[in-house]
Length: 258
Picture 1 (spheres, rainbow, N blue to C red):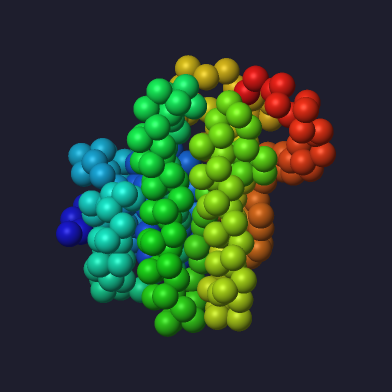
Picture 2 (spheres, rainbow, N blue to C red; picture 1 turned 45 degrees about the vertical axis):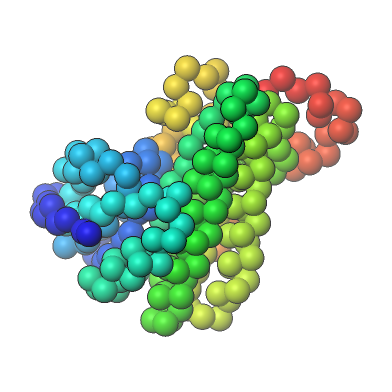
């Protein structure tokens, strides 16, 4: 069920997506992307997430017409129906897939069952939902899907091996989906941020080339305006670091603490 909360304040650039679906509606990065788009106040945003109250608060800060809908990345069987309901309310031009969790590897070692929730949220839920979205966008022959990957996808480390594996899988899926949608008029934009300071990483020491949700939002918004095909590295210099990480000999790689 979708609930409308109309917000008509501020102004933005003309054109661009008029209806946007944000999966993981409370995501700091996802909301930063939406805010950075600078669309007009007539733009409709569907914030999809598990906490209705938090979605209402997040929507109140956006200068758009906001709808909220309950969406749980782990309820795989419901994803097609949820997508059908969203698209029944009008064409969607932009889908931002931002659902995600970060659980420390020591916690997963102690309680391996929680790894299923992490993988389900960070990978499986994206697959089931985005396949449904891709089908609807392909029917229109138009639209963009933004997938939030991570530098962790380049080479999983022992310090966060399950999280890294989930991002590696998501990254591979996004690249495959890009090829599957080639020629359909639907674009996939793959985003690979570095360490992002925010709620998810609170209490953790920032890694080299750390960034912020706002910086990621600005980079993605700029890439969308330019029509980039990606991947979008945030910051850009992270691409060089990623290339270097692939070359580190495995014995040295195993010695990394984080």
